[in-house]
Image (cartoon, rainbow, N blue to C red):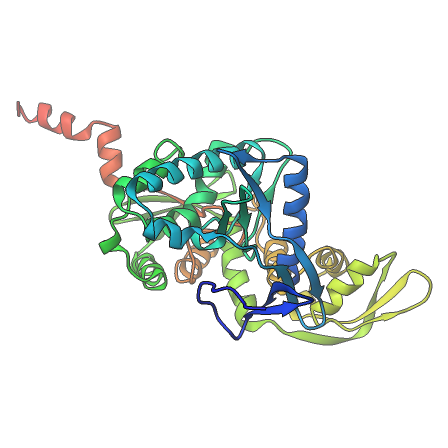
Length: 389
């Protein structure tokens, strides 16, 4: 059997093979991707999406090898969307971009946000009228109700907008994105697109160089800091959460404890999740489990049992680190001194990603002086007071 040609991929992680006369994709992955694909399939069965005669579907999963972390899916023939957009006529491109725009609106309306919405991750089977979704490494959001305008804007803008902008001309971006978002942000000219990592590094460096001076706390929740160009409101919990999360990513350690922590009535899936985090866990009687090693950050905590129960419901290591950072961060409603807040701000602004918390929420609101001038019409008042017409 002759294997079909596919887009280039990392041969160390992904391979196209023949099994029982059928082409399949075997991919080194995480259990989260497998779980999200199954959940997405179930969601689309209950909330089908059909746009311009094309039915949205998730590529069928044939096997998940948990031990080797290998995900096997059926190879779905058709046109890769990225290749198609690059080579099709302008008329076909306009028609397809309109279809994609309606698809995004349908996903918003059915509570289905696919984190990997990018042209290279979509296959269109024109013969069978199917649009296949092929990648689920990024987080998905599944709801039983429509997604809010703000949530939809943030979710799509964070990844999909940049992916499509690197491929489409500005006039094509207008067709796809105009009217979809609640906030205005400029279209990206292809010649101006640089390395994502370099752009992120530049943003972090600029934020890290800003001299932020803490002046007050509002509602025991928001840190108020000023700098030469304006004022920032920083939510203390998620700023601290970002600090702790990046420390955990760099210094994650599992340590043995002398007295085990006893958990009861764990489901097999919970036990498996704890084992996947490299925790030492033994059966300790009927419906009892002894935890003999824990993350180092739990050593001095009184709620370590509750934290372990929370971790047991998680999945991969990153999810565990996010949960640990969230649980350990300073709570909103906690009164802090100026010194304590300044320490948080100084550490937070030099993190790798100071713009959002690990869950994706924005950490700060910037009130630039130029915006304050315009809001209070300060330029107009100054002019009148000095007799300037």
